[in-house]
Length: 173
Image (tube, rainbow, N blue to C red; front, side, top):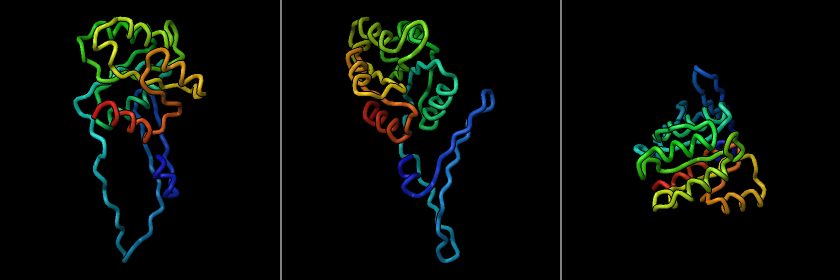
């Protein structure tokens, strides 16, 4: 997204439940020798074969994040709250999820508590699966609280695609 801003462009995301999500990128490009030279860049990030557990209670946020994950080849399973995420994690075999993205403020069990519960299950998988906080809470104390709960990363909302891809690059490559 930063590169789009640096090029004087904009990105717009429109989502309708049941219909899908449209990503629109607008750029002003100069015509050179009466030819428009636009090189279709190949997908920089391909995470095909990876699976994410996304715990998010806001349907629009869940849909947007899911679409971004799918765009880079990640299979997404969703939970509406921390309790559901914990249950799903427990029901799967070891190493089923490659990474977990956890909202903080959710009903029934918040993201911090859900993360502590997952870590408390013990075993190599539960203690080492990457868990990323996705939250509007972006103060230093929020980042510290996420770390104390056992989270590996902290992404503030609204999610910047480049930062999300950087986190995926780090933990999944």
